[in-house]
Length: 259
Image: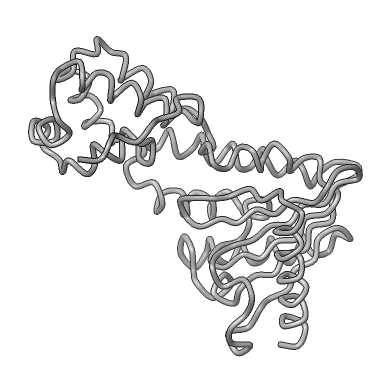
C-alpha cells in the first residue's frame, strides 16, 4: 500500500481542513472507506477532502464533525472557508491584478469578471456553486462587483479582451440578463482603456484552446500569465513560459482581427 500523500496545511484553507480531517480520522482509528460508509459517501470523496481538492457540502461536514468528535472545529473551519470570497488558487493572481498597467485576456466561455453585470455574475455563480446558499452567492457577487473598481480609477489599466464567439452566443441568466450584459460591453468599449475583440468560430483551431488566459504587465517587474478553467487556475511567472503565452496571445489577436 502506498504511503499517504504528504499534506501542507499552509497551502490553502481547504488544505488546512484536509490536514485537520485526516488527523481526526486517524485519531478515531477509521479508514477513509469506513468513514465514508458512516456518512454515507464514497471513500474517494473523503480522500479529496483530505487532499484539499474538494470542500464537503455543509450537511456532510456536519456529520464529519459529529462522527469524529471534532466539537465544532470542522464546522467552524468550514464556515471560514465559505466566507472567503475567492478560492485559494485565484488569490495570488488577484493580488497582482490592481498593480497591472496592461491586462490581455482571452475568455473561452464567459465574460471576464471585470466586465460582468451583477445579474450575469449571479447566474454564473449559481450554476457553478449549486450547493451555496443565496446569501453566500450574494457575497460573491458583491466581491466581484467591488473588484471592478480596478477599471474606475484615474489611471486604469489597458484591458484588451478577446472573447470566444461562444461567450456572446450563449445566453447566461436568460435573454434579458444577456441583453443587459452585451449592452454593458458596448458601453465599456467607449472607454479608451477597454478593447474587445470577438474570435469567430470560423477561425478554427487556435493557440489557447485549453481554457482562458490572462497576461498582466507592470510598470516595474516582469509580466505574468494566468490560466484558468471553471474550478482551477495557475499563476505562471517563469519568463520562458510567460513568453510562450505572450506569443500565443499575439497569434490569437491576429486570428481575431482576420476573422
